[in-house]
Image 1 (cartoon, rainbow, N blue to C red):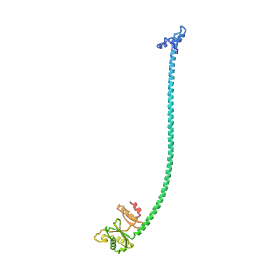
Image 2: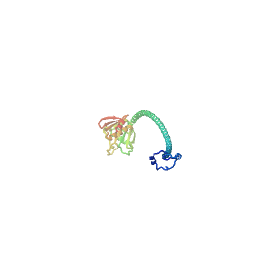
Image 3: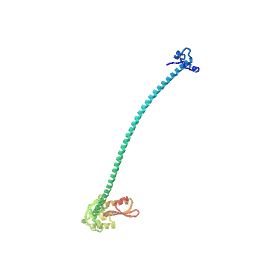
Image 4: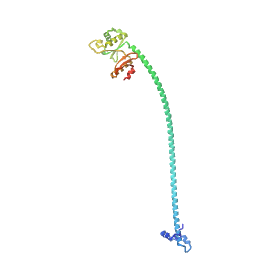
Length: 302
């Protein structure tokens, strides 16, 4: 690379003074050497300045090229990072698509299961309706059978009397029965008694007569007087009450117990059991209204 004197570069004296601190100003450049004797010193200075400017331009170009290379490498690195990020984004999008597909599949399965459940519910409702119809029919048949059974049992118990209030340990149960009948003016002998035994955990005596007529005479006198004591049955001086009751069927006995509970809980004023083939109760309510109710209707009053 060539150098020039200030004068050779055509620089004015003011510029020459400004650049007087530049080294090698006294160097005789190639232009000066080649110039003819007596060449202008200003021309030499101009050549020298031009040489320095070219150096600066070369240095600037080198810096620009280095910066361009560095920026290019950085851009390449950024492009690689962008490519990596783009690939990752694509992978995430693929995963999201796969999850969405699974969700759609699960949603379809749920919808299908819901349809099956709805179908099953319809079947259950149909079966339930059928069962209700069968249950109603069965209940009606059971009720009919219970009525028939109750009527048969009532007829079998028609000649019976339940005696309560007698002392425990009686050896001959027929004797107090004959004494009670005599007390009411009815003649009864042992041959008139078909069966006599302890019932209700040995707290009462069941008497079955051969004749319904004898049984009704005794009960009629008992109901009319309501006067029967222990001394009338077995003698002695004990005047504790002795009670005579019908031999109720299980349904009539349940109705009687239900009415007693209503009376004890003060939900009714009084009741009268109607011991028919279909037993009912004549209920006097708290407002003095009188109604004849079945066992189910009485149980509903609880």
